[in-house]
Length: 226
Image (cartoon, rainbow, N blue to C red; front, side):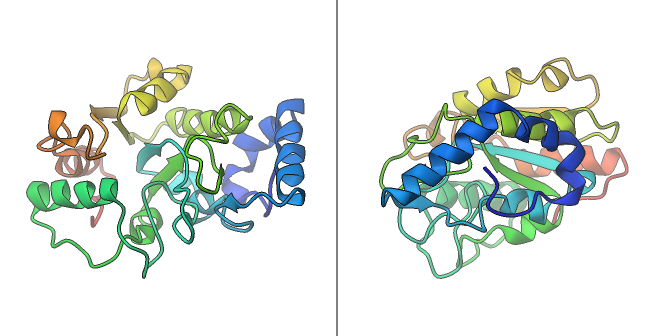
């Protein structure tokens, strides 16, 4: 499965999952897809980027996405994020609009969210790869067990964290994780997905960024410079 070494902080939580037959099957399937000429995003070396930039013991906020962007040059291992120089996708445009409305933050000229990740925002997709041009094509191939384990590892920590769940898919994923579904000390924020299809149904005005910072500050974990 892994195209790069698993970051040290995540090893205790994820290595047991990576040793399972399901994970090995996923790795073999990905290699076979690439050997057959299929283009897979993000490229090798970037698929664990969210875990690399946000060590487990640094996580303050978890934002769950569904799968990587499936267009050329878009996916770089962080949910909702694109590299600088790539057109900002519609969902991220709406995230930025809500951020400006919520905190008065000036909308940046790019869609790269690495600065969030380095501050402790885990931008995790449910599946960490996708076939070019085919959204959702790598769902139910084995990634879910791995990313569920990552969410569970955060939820099992004593330090209070914020889980931001946009859309039904993210909520369903969170409820699969017993450590989160029964949590007593984390803040779980839910809202419709920021997609243009649903953003006006309650995403706009949900104020996730100020709510997250208020919670983090109240629990001695600082704030995120969104």
